[in-house]
Amino acid sequence: MASEADHLEVRTGQGTQTWLMKFGSVNPLNPAMLAALDAQLSKALADETVSAVVLTSGLKIFSAGGDATWMGQLLTEGGTPALIEAFNRAMDTFRELCIRIRRSPLLVIAALNGHTLAGGLELAAACDLRFAADAEKLQIGVPEMDLFGAMPSGGGGAQFIARLMGPSRALQFILDAKPVSPQAAYRLGLVDRLCPAESLLAEAEGFAAAVAKKAGRIGVHAAKRAILGGPELPLMEALELDRSVHWDAMRRGNFLPGAESFVRRFGSKNG
Image (cartoon, rainbow, N blue to C red; front, side, top):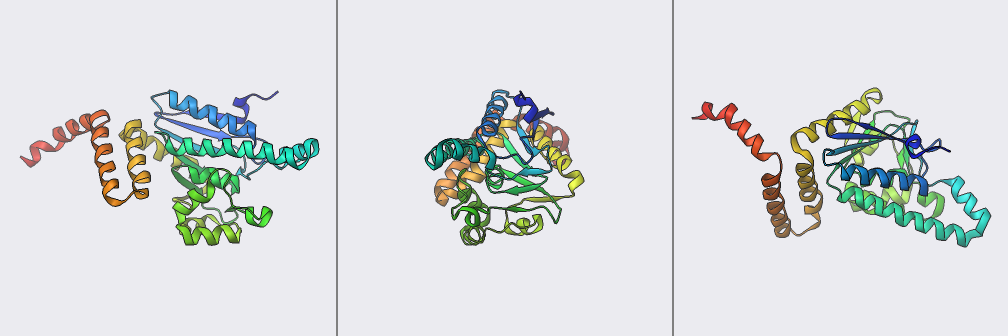
């Protein structure tokens, strides 16, 4: 029987981890995959040296979404009621995983090196940044409306996507249900950086390592709280959040050694 390590390869860098998903042939979302990702997130959170994670695929597809084989087995064994009950349980787990990723003090970068569809895009949208291979044939989308007449919301995808694209564009994208190229996804705001396919992972890991070195976990968490959480608040409340997070990060993070280095390098030049 394959172990968790066979399906989720973890590579450790300086302050970083890279998670390579190798579940089945298309990294389908099912209870086993969700449990493995959740367990690895817990391990990363328990390791104070880890500040950033790159989530990518060890296959040719990032993730194609729901596991049709697993769903078919449920339908055969227990009929529609069993399918709906088990699927809803799995989606509740998926939603909690996506929330944990977003709320974690880690920078999580999704490196999209293959088709990213349905729940696969929901997972990527829950990450903090999305780097994608600049390959015209790569498809990024949420086909749920075409397939099921339903929103892509198992992992809260509709909410994450709307915050990336804006409500009107997200509504059109979700209702149209047609995948787009990485270039179109970049223009829509779904993707943050396009990279040559052959250097995608290196660029994502390089960015993660640079952030881990200069910001550390405290700096990353402060930035996520202020920048991702602030826009959801009225301006005056967001400014107060910004102030409290800023000063706490300066007190506990890398500010003091950084300030000392800055003074040593430039203080005499300005005197």
